[in-house]
Every structure is written in structure tokens, then in C-alpha cells.
Amino acid sequence: MLRLLTIELHKLKYNKPAKVISLVYFILITFIALIASIEFNYGEIHFRLADQGIFNFPYIWHFNTYVAAWLKILLAIVIVSMMANEYSNRTLKQNLIDGLSKKEFIVSKFLTVIGFALISTLFVFIVSLILGLMFSDYNEIGIIFSDLEYLLAYFVKILGFFSFCLFSGILVKRSAFALGFLAICFFAEWIIYALLRWQIFNDKIIADNISQFFPLMSIFNIIGEPGSRLGAVQSAASQLGESFDKDYSVQPLTVLIVLVWTFLFIYWSYLILKRRDL
Image (cartoon, rainbow, N blue to C red):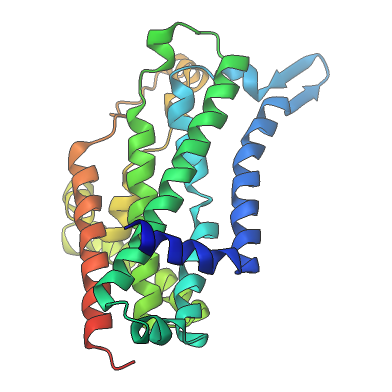
């Protein structure tokens, strides 16, 4: 395992675009901290986002993992280009000539995907912990480390998405086309969802129950939106006579669905590589 991971790290070491994009990704995550300094002044009204509780424990785990997950497309570019480079630079063929089996090659790529997911999750944890300790109104140990399931959900979310990117890169070979394939799959799922909801069943619940098994939608749904959970939003809705009846917790079924898709993406990647004439 270590040998396979070392091979991939050596390749990434000399991949300047991958290093730049990865650096930008982690820098953008730290920019979440800039939200704390945003202040709106309108006459005598002074409004600062950090004062609205977005960095309170344990809400910050939900908020930061949701926001950071939107940036995963940057690392998706790295994953896709990493696979495309194997074909364009003929390193894949050379690795096989040097004695690496196709199974070992896929394992090495999946280990890299796991590494990216772990590092990203750890980084989000550190950034969130620092921001929470600086701005949270609640600093009890029990509160700080509650709701950490959002970090697990974040790890599974980006692991599943990166595995899909790896599968796309192997299937399509070229970076631009592989990213285009991702976009096509995204829009296709939403078109099917729209047909299910407004044409076939005309029922949101049935459409939601079916679409939760779609690969990209399941990845998207694993962490729900945190905005309506915010105390200020809940209070404003209450004053208007409205309420948000939502379950914001991480659903085990959704996690399981994403893990199954992750396995399938890696398995299909191996089958494609196994049957393809290189």
C-alpha cells in the first residue's frame, strides 16, 4: 500500500498545475475566516455575520463542511487531470510495463483519492476549531465536540465525489471531456428529477425518495443546507408565523448510498482499465 501511495505522490510532486490548484483550494477554505470580518453598516445599523452565530459550536461543523464542500470542484480538476496525464504522458503504460498490475494501479489512485479526502477533512476540522474557539459563544467541551458527524459526512461526500471524478477520468481519458461528463451527469440527474416531480408522479416526496439514490444527488444531499438552521433565521421565521420543520442530521442511509456508489465507481474504473487495450 505504501509503495503504491509513494508512486502517486512522486507523480504529484512534479505536477505543478495540481500543486497550484490544491494550494488554491486550501487557501479558499481558510477564507471562510474572512466571513467573520464582513460588516455591514447602514446608518445606525451595524451587522456582522460572525455575530449571528455562524461560528458557534456545534453549528460551525455543519456550516463549514457545507461551505467547504462547494470548493471540491477544484480538487476534482486535480483528480481528473491526474488520470488524464497518465494517458497523455504514457505513464500508465510504463507503470504496467514496469510490473504494476492494473489492480494495483487503481488501488494507487484510490489511495490518492482517500489521501486528498483525509487531508481536506483534517484541514476543515482545524479551521473550524480555530474559528469556533475565537468566535463561539459556547466553549464547553461537550458542545465543542458534538455534531462531529458532519466531518464524517464531509469525508464521505468528497470521497464519493473524487471517486466519481476518477471514474470519469478513466472513462473519458481527457480532462476537459471528463469534466464535461461530470456536468452532463449533473444536469441529467436534475432533468430526471424534474420529470419525476412534475410530470411522472407530480409528487415531491416520491421524486425525493427516488432521486436520493442518484449518485451526484446522494453526494449533494449528505450534508443539508445549514442556513435555515441558524438561530436568527429561525427567530425571523417565527415572528412571521412560519417554521422550518427539517431534519438537519446526517442520515445513515445517505452515507451508505454514497459509500456504495464510491465502491461502484472504483470497481467500474478497474473493469474499464482491465478490458481496455492500452
